[in-house]
Amino acid sequence: MQLEHSFTVPVPVEVAWRALLDPERVAPCFPGATLTGVDGDEFSGTVKVRMGPISLLYKGTGRFTTADESARRVVLEAAGKDSRGNGTASATVTATLSPSGTPGPGHAEGDSTTVGVITDLTITGRPAQLGRGLIGEVGGRILDAFAACLATELAGPDTPSQPSEPSDENVPSSHTNGTSTPNVPPRPVGSAEEIDLIDFAGQPVLKRLAPVAAAALAVLLVLRWLRRRG
Image 1 (cartoon, rainbow, N blue to C red):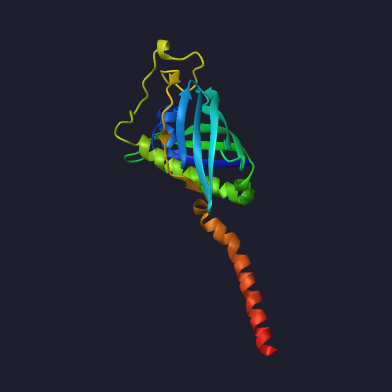
Image 2 (cartoon, rainbow, N blue to C red):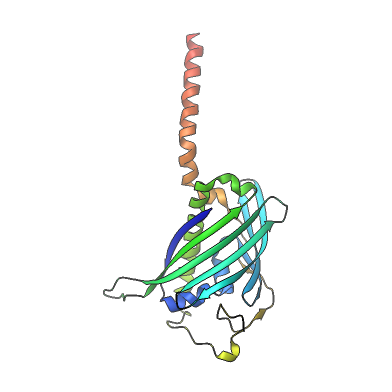
């Protein structure tokens, strides 16, 4: 299935571009994710997911397949499998960055960045039971949480207003993410708390269940009335 979302971060495109290509910086903002290793353009990690009483732990890998700086377009491929064999997930994520912001007092055109995200997602197992529509809504809520965290991270006092240019000697031959070290020893980075898909579904689930609950209540009331009449 294909999902489309967008979010905005309060930094110029140049800063957002380099930050989004740094797994160690963005991983802590993704709910339930833990980054366990980075090797050039490839990385590995886990994502903890809960569906009500069911806990899932996806272990997987990902890699940047395209990073077109002139077009501000990056493509990421990732795949993972639940450690208990309850399902798999794979995705190709295409993110395109563009300047945003409204000129005015205290604001300049291009002082923030809009990130458009298109995700080609394939999932099997229990999470697939949510259905396409609900998965889209849950995915949007997860991305909103990610964007809010990333905006806070990028707006921090240590974030430079302009990116520093790496020297040629520090750029790996398979360079796409701008990191100066091609091999990073595995170390946990990210949230240790699992992400509860039902909690993220929230109101969408209630909206779907409300008509069913209302119909069931109507049937019960009719049956009760018939018993009294009998």
